[in-house]
Length: 304
Image (cartoon, rainbow, N blue to C red; front, side, top):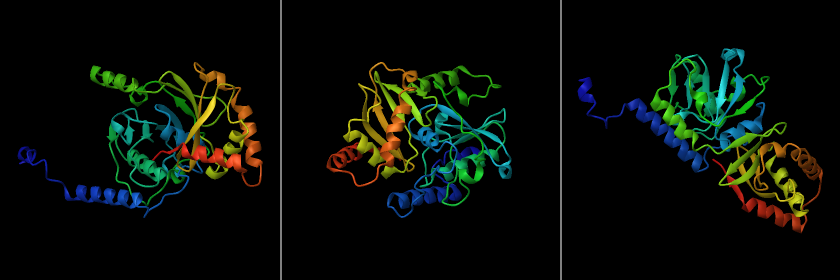
């Protein structure tokens, strides 16, 4: 009978069908505005700006985290992406990896990642989770993780972090990872500037800087700087737009052609000082600043 059932591939387990229907219903409700998640999904976690950057603009990176005592005080690894868009992995060596760049099925990515993490903790070593059953209830990362543990990010140029060092890597797996690595946009985390990442695409260099300020206040401040001609990082650079995700704004600068990441270290503190002054400025935007703000908003891209 088991062999014959293989031919009945269209038969679907009723429980599986019910879960799929629930996920589709949740997605539809979110798209129609019937369900809303928290504005800042990762607020309250150490390194909120890096959580958002790793979810949206960094191709390959890992970061350290630890669950609370209630959830076993386990050291875990948060990653940008796992091969096959896996939600999580419990490697044979016992290490838990949970991914941020997965198809999110609810309006709260913090709860989605926490659900995958808790599911992985319950599995045996050597298990991978392609997807998990999500809902709008249950603990969030803010409930599951020890917020006293620093979220230390390491950027990679391959996806080899998914490999178990104790396992033998087959030629097929090695080739698949190499092909994945070819798609990685060269990216470097800027030291001493939380949430800032240099990258090189199509022969041009850019800075993507995930910012912690409230969105409206940051846009006003950037508009003030832009109107005064002070939104550049140095001569030859320009603020070309912003990304928006998880309640945060990620301004993007085009850099001087050929610029390397280490050249930005001395530039960012000076810009932060100008930004802080603009944020502290009170009063309505003037006509020129309003035009600058409208231009920035028109070039804003919302990510997920």
